[in-house]
Image 1 (cartoon, protein in one colour):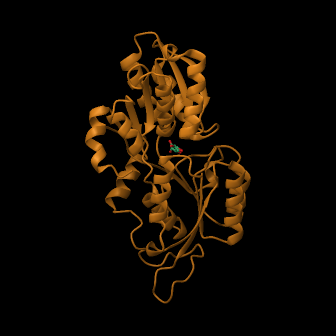
Image 2: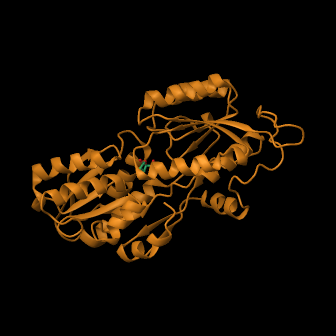
Image 3: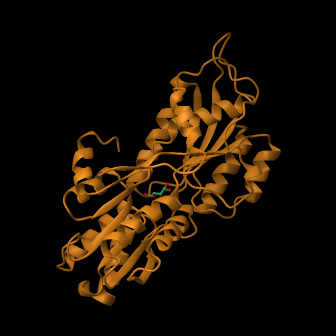
Length: 335
Ligand code: GZL
């Protein structure tokens, strides 16, 4: 069963953008203002964009990077300067400073962590370079960026927690949590949403530790949990993303237990490898986090560079999958 998760008034923006055929199609008309570079008489002006990506930590990130590179292509009117910061917040801020010194027309950031952005965003503002956030959010004032497009992480956590509450909440349940990158918006918000949904149930968190959104991180942390509690001492794993859930599966099987049966697993992302594990019964439920944000981000950049008003917040639409829904979705899954 796949359900659609629509959240917040910004959903209207998502639907409106979808209906207007937004999608970074060939740039229509010259983008006035913003310093976009000339493309020859009458041709659309090329927009030079610096994109500061987190790194390449997960299958979700690979799909997001592909979506962004396709949307910010030369054919669609962009000159993309791409940087992946290898999950290093200081390196990511340095990349943004480099974009500022290059005099790009706009900057897009998928911020690794929420804090520490005020200074460099003020520098971009002083340089009159608009900033669009995609994917994760920042704690800095929203006056320091033009717009954000991404997924509702709190709602994802709530949906995962509701599944756990409905399926395991009436019996004593020992849960371990594989947390995302410490200080990141998805890790913070998914944890908050999940814990609110299981409040009052018999699900008890016996351990919680970051696996940094990576498969290897999830495996190593799960190995530690299994050593500490034994497979019999763990009933449920809440993984903040599929890559860590897949690492946990490896650890659980190496310990001689059956993931999805002896130890239930609920996860977030719905990338292909995660959906395959769900279809195979090794994961029990996955909440989607749509990584295909490129077209919406490109549309926001075009409008901002052209001096047009934009929604401050735009949510992607997410679903959720049980085993049957995963089997049905896999053959045509885009990521
Ligand atoms: C969520 C995104 C998270 C994914 C992880 O929008 O920031 O980062 O859930 C990824 O898979 O590494």
